[in-house]
Length: 287
Length: 170
Image (cartoon, rainbow over all chains, first blue to last red; front, side):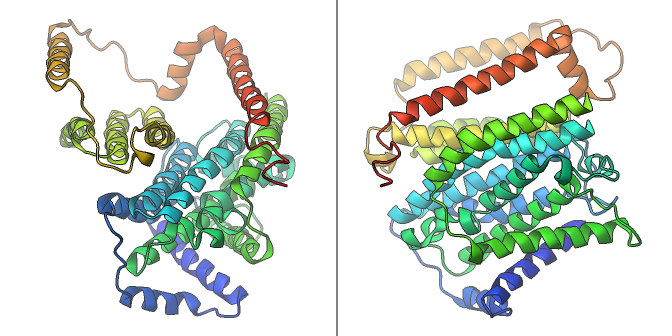
């Protein structure tokens, strides 16, 4: 379980890093204090159970996904289908954001929720093909086996398309940076518009959690897992996770927000064929 | 393990009933999703981890797509008004009770075979091999062909849609 706690700590660090890029590294702690003391905003005829389920399920899904992310040889839950479990848990974000947007009974929040489902349909297929490509090369759905299979040559090097697609979908599943359209400013905050106080805190924590977990899973999938000189495996996993996470957080203030219908066009006409070709090449090489 | 099985079984049926009791399409859809998640949990309990996790994954995606379509096709604006999930309540109740009784009777009446052999070390692999067997290559090619057809038809259909590039993007 210590791996899950470490990833939770990294999520807090990611929030601080995001603040630091804006010159306010302690901002997350101020925000926590502010949100915990803010009164909850109540909207008329809101579907409260669905909203609560939506808000709470996001960090829960991130924590459940973290169960299968290995640090070196250590992993919280040892399973042969880690890749599929990770995939299933991050799809929970679709339900979380849609429910949050729907439940509060507010037009802009509703549009934000629908935007995320559309974005999900755009990123999910290329994302799945990227995951399958790495699993295909290692002949395993176990994240540790995939990490161990990359002796010498990282999958990020010889399947770059899959790696780039994975990074894109990591941003998209956490609706972060260029994929922040579901909670964008043109909707006054989109799906999260009506959330205030503890609700907003929980949803934000879940978002950082998803971002961190997807950075953590990138390490065994594409960056050789815990392999590296001198340091032990878990330390290398930690270093690589931090590097990926820093990159993901950095994109937020560097890249403009993409409209998800434009991303949809690119995803279905460019990314899916590209990932299929990548999988074909990998399939021919390993078989 | 047995307790877990029964808790999930009762929860699956309970959420299934909830689908027809709640008064909103969103709640009905997510009650159905909860029921499917319980079924996925059952498969995890009997050791079919791949199938169990796959059901969780696919059902979440399917129900999210379904809720969009169900709400879209509702009679009232955007499905935001309360509604009832049942029609012809008496007839439906009779048919569903009859079907349930027949299926439950089948469970007790069928002569179940004794277990022969042990579970394979990798049930996922064994299942794939027994479903596809020597046709594996054909099935894989077909799978990719179906996907390519889907993508191509979507691309062709959208290029003539009302959101054609150059109109609202300009």
